[in-house]
Image (cartoon, rainbow, N blue to C red; front, side, top):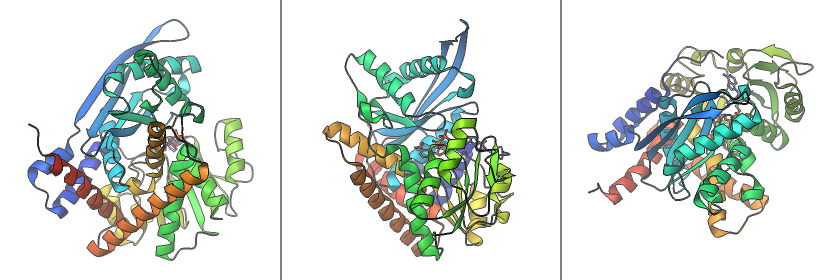
Length: 418
Ligand code: NAD
């Protein structure tokens, strides 16, 4: 995928500046919003299966904790940089404020291609990284969760590592853990469920019928997979294109995401699914579809291709898939962009439910989790839509206005220490 080589933290800061200008935020407050509060860079050795030591680099960035403990996933990817983690941590801050859950934002990452590691190597890397960042994580401080190439098993290793060091069980140190360790029902699909929910709401307002609407999904992992299944099973949309890191597939009549998932599990990729024609990740973005869901990585929709996007609705499953210049082009083309800080906030919302259930020691049914998730997503979407209409701005700017109001209010209430 030919992602444009843009530094995501430059994007994050450009977005902050646009909204700070609109709100007339004074210099000091604006500078606080432009800076991460705390950053940790760690280098650590891992014993590889062959006996050699290999040194890896990881990061944890806590961006802003005015509204509560920091929250954000951990990414394992060869392209991870400190600036990418900073951007993702900033976006987590705005996202938690958008859905009004009592968290600040954080993110972590390790520069590694996990496909290259054995399971044992991956476990040792995870445990050592967890140990290296353990001084700054904890249920009341900073609570990691899964992101690209990490999952509930990664979270289970982190719980065990952290608990061994403390001498007692600390399941609340992460969310997105297995249900057997205190995870929440519904967390696995929560991000995709939130994306599907916001698409349903946005489509209704845009006069697009989701039933039989054509949908293209870039990235078929946790987020893209669940979004595809839920749009297909519950909203009866026609998923015509799906891709992963190796390429994409297209079928005009529609795909059964369950069958594609089975093929991916058996072969390692969606590519080669019978009865489909190949489509590149770049071409997928420009297909003549009603709904487009970028659910892979940053920097996909840029000033270069925004004009060729044909979708009426874009539901951002991924974080940072659209650059600010593209936002403006899409707004002028009247494409409805459901921004990441709203559209993919279902994951952190159910992470919050999980954290609350851990504290309460009382566990909710899947129906309760999904019902409460739906409520949060509908309420947040409606608030942003109304603000967008009122201020004549696109939904990302509206979401940022809402988020900045909440973060800045918390900062002002605390005052400046000392
Ligand atoms: P994942 O590792 O489960 O899946 C990633 C998918 O993207 C895979 O199908 C992979 O093959 C594909 N992919 C990776 N690199 C690609 C490339 N260069 N081109 C095309 N496809 C590529 O990750 P995920 O958890 O589904 O995360 C996807 C996006 O959603 C990320 O931007 C992440 O930050 C965001 N997100 C995740 C969550 C969550 O709860 N997991 C929550 C909010 C946002």
